[in-house]
Image 1 (cartoon, protein in one colour):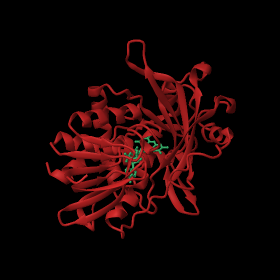
Image 2 (cartoon, rainbow, N blue to C red):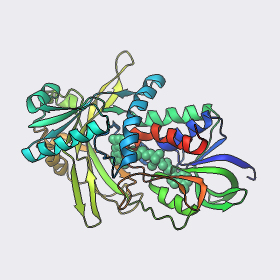
Image 3 (cartoon, rainbow, N blue to C red):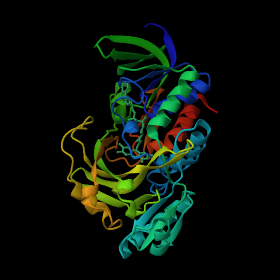
Image 4 (spheres, protein in one colour):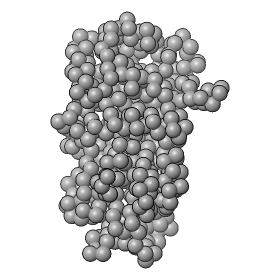
Length: 389
Ligand SMILES: Cc1cc2nc3c(=O)[nH]c(=O)nc-3n(C[C@H](O)[C@H](O)[C@H](O)COP(=O)(O)OP(=O)(O)OC[C@H]3O[C@@H](n4cnc5c(N)ncnc54)[C@H](O)[C@@H]3O)c2cc1C
């Protein structure tokens, strides 16, 4: 390969596909490189997440300005996109519940933050929460009507199709292994699945490499300081049609958020929550499916591909949700999925910046949750940074 291409996008998760669509729609020549065997095939964050469309209450504007802004913008863009392109999604709302006085005080703080972030929110009593989800027990709850659920795989595939239709090329089974600044462009070296390598020049690149975004940033700038500290989490599921007496209406139900302390430092956690899944209804419309997921139970991953190994005992998941969802039994639960997030070490926000070593490379590093929700807003911003308005 010897020609020079316009824009190389590294990674075909939800963010890379959205960036490719935006850039190709603006007339850019786009080549997407993806290590996995196909888009929506293989492991990445976009294929193993909770599928929640967050409303944007968790992120303060001082320490997490990008998450705060892009979650709220992305929420609205995502609903509009899903309506227009028939991607399954439901605005089912969310309850964030407090089971004691201390947690109720924390909820008030998040209510304030929601208002600052422009998120529709109301603080409701335990009785009002039960009108929405009859078997949920709490003293008080935040009701967030703009939260929802999306079929993440369908979203990624739709973005990929739209980008392809606009002329973006996707090379799968192809890993970026080198990126060297040259006066005439960035010289990218790629490795195919069979081990063969190839090099070509590009005018610009966007790093959307998820768990490997720190390493891709270092290909261009060996001094790049950002470090992804992979966060593994397991989720379980139960079939609500086997337990109709639980009377679930299909909302997201979250506990009061906490800060988790570990040997590697402290991180914020949204907590182990109940999330509905989707299925096609009788008329093809999207409805609440039979599976309800519970997770994530997070802890440091051994490495970035640490998907195997033992599952925590079901009791651990049960203990987390029993205070606010007491009707559930341990026997109802079974393993669902293991996911790994690209959490940044000692940096609470996402990084979105041109590489200090070469401004032809735009880095999106550490795009952990709520990156699914924020994907379309991130892509719009990336296009603006690369091409202007
Ligand atoms: C357990 C879990 C639950 C989550 N829940 C939610 C949620 O409910 N709501 C929400 O909004 N967000 C959630 N998230 C976060 C969300 O899934 C991510 O923020 C989002 O998917 C990030 O997308 P991405 O495209 O940046 O990264 P990824 O989906 O990880 O894609 C990156 C891609 O880059 C490729 N790649 C890496 N290195 C190279 C290379 N050198 N060459 C070529 N290709 C490369 C990888 O193979 C991968 O396909 C969750 C994440 C996890 C793990």
